[in-house]
Length: 630
Image 1 (spheres, rainbow, N blue to C red):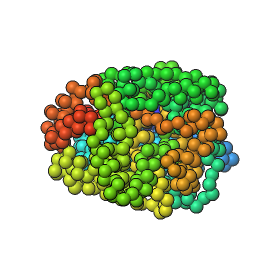
Image 2 (cartoon, helix red, strand yellow):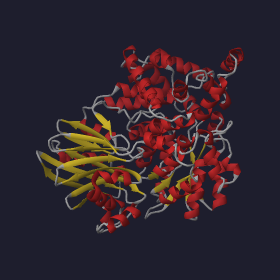
Image 3 (cartoon, rainbow, N blue to C red):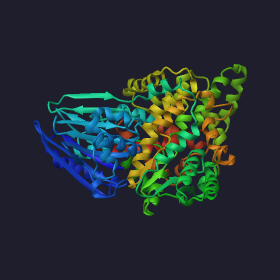
Image 4 (cartoon, helix red, strand yellow):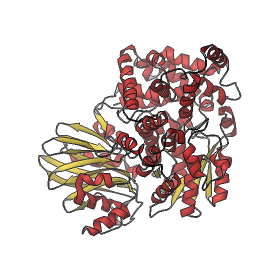
């Protein structure tokens, strides 16, 4: 895992690349390098910061140059050994053992046609001295980021948006991305927080030529893979997950795991321990008073059970963070306004692991999206049944739930929060209900929160979600939800915060569930194999019973989150008042003060849980201040 950057036919491209690369130093503290070449009407420069994981010697250093090709690469190829054997059979000879060299040789032999052969997480730039072309590429599922800016006939790119924003200085805020961020509490991968910048889409490549001509293509489509998989025979899911976990342990340094005590992390930890006895795992706990106030489950108890059963060296971290200090730090590292406090958890766990000498960790990220493990998936299937209940019975139920408090002064009530959330979308049409089940506001609330000038932008953001949701040929309701999540929620939020938070701590996080083979297996399963009765993620639970005890497999779902209500009512209360009453977003007219004050009042009364809304307003405020302070 590394940081990459470059400049193509760009004024002062060498110094620009050096500054971009310097901003990415946290992604690769083990080494740095720059390649330069005169091409056409200008220069080409590739920069690299190295986090050495495979082939720790200088033969794995980057940018890597061979036979007229130069490569700067961020990621891991889990099928590098197989590709190496295939390339050696074709006559290629290798100097070292890195997957970087495998990728460079694969590009030399197959060019862009090598991309569908790659299994892993990656973003890279490769320059061909013979043609003068620079090509950028990103992995199939958007695990690794790649941002770029085009001007005239030139281009600059980097692993993180902050590098481009810091260097260029004149990027302008994209209001549509901020509106989307308010709706979702993250920016969809299809949008970028600055108008002039863009993200290379997952499963795609972009080539730019010396004359400024740009060509872009898609080599892998999640939508198409899901469509094809629905006609495939049902897989041996346990075998697929175990093989992916084994492949993701490829490294020349120790590998550890996240272990929350939930199904996904426990499953991966058990499989990893099978292949690497005594493996370390990291788990978190919260201050007792915070956990009680948030009504959080005792995940630590289950993590200890897994660790003891599989001989795992469990490292327990109690999180009592200085959130006032961490908020601006995390806002900086996340690049775009992302309002999920799980980013803090990831950063603190990875920091502790890095201090212990661990560079690589496995995460259960992605299983919920692919196997219908979120409460929203079950809630939406229940909503279909709920709509069949006579209205005369639904009305009094809603009236009673509306009057119930979500919290008192001493504790919160999760069941009431869930009930209120469910009833807010239970009677809506399919796509609208699914979107509303995890977004922060409905249409009226969002337009009421924003400047009147942004009403059309709200409609554009909602249309994008509807278009993405309906852009498939799947006949299965559950799999339609899983596909939409895997195309929007997974790359836009979970993979994004995981990459930025872990790399802020110079740690590589690998996600065995977010793997091309696991994806194929997931969409070969019908929705009835994922949700049955009132239970989600059924197929994965069945697979996990081959190694995990039932008390782990069938425990109530936990949350990889944080005690937001406790933080908001204590640590962050003064900052909330400042931002709501006199924040830059309010003074600029982007947000309406009265609407924010209403959120605060609703939360304080205990009738609604607005802690997540307010947390995201704080993250957005901090991001906006930095973005406009040029």
